[in-house]
Image 1 (tube, one colour):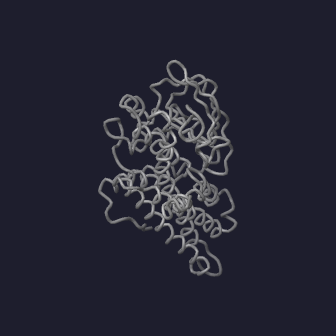
Image 2 (tube, rainbow, N blue to C red):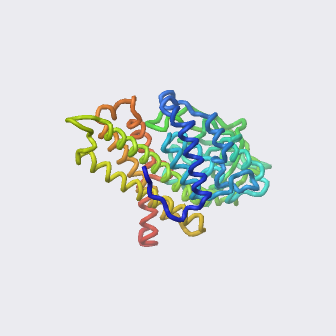
Image 3 (cartoon, one colour):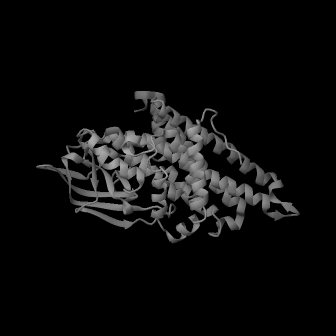
Length: 385
């Protein structure tokens, strides 16, 4: 099946996409259903992706990464998510939420300490921002970093922390100062005494990924663990999410593409009333709509990635891509389930997995409502505040 792609993709972009697709088809597709049924996080496959350079796509070569760009990451995310959305989460987190803020704000010592292991998969990272009382309103987070002679001692809790159950390195946002956005700092820490990994949170989808609660009970982070300037953590968190939304958009495109391909295959093969059901417009038209929307979502996503690569503002473009692509993923999964009928509702087919996995793309790294807010503010400026 042909997919709309920009004409200006480089040879490197095409090569990394082919590498990801071959790996997905060989190592992920045959196992994805079993992983999801067993709620197994395929750490061994995640580390294989590290060996291929897929966990350090945005990490510069001097720190052990692939030295590629946001477009490369988006192309890889689509291919891996098309095979299994849960497995693609590791790529998004390692690159977009853990490596990216260290590349952006880390000291040379921090970059040399953390980035090679993150890029290779020897270190699995997580991004600890969300709390039980601080989701979309990140400025009210309450995890506290109390100053000590040589750093901070952390107390508080985090929720919905992706990769948290398998993580070795933690990018943590905590309050080092007073109330409000200016009191928040970013810290990077290894797993250590005082960091408690809670239960795996039961989820609707993404059953092959780890999502946990974290608790801090005196975790000590030294001064060398401060990421960027003290009090500038929320700016770093939001800048990180601007890029992360492009990855989620690409993930949504991958889920939607998988649902589309399943619907086309099933409708072509399913016999009813003397022929395949693909000859009926009632089957054709919803699938045709999804095909157009998947291509549009991909182009929006790659446009946002291209702006980021060129150093241009990309916050609104990433928000548009995530808003649209996530809604397409949900619609595509619904069309796949409806096309398969009773089989679509059965766990013996992947349609129901796509249905469950798609919904989260409308929620994490900024809900669809937050994306609309970002877009509106880009249009109306201060009048929207």
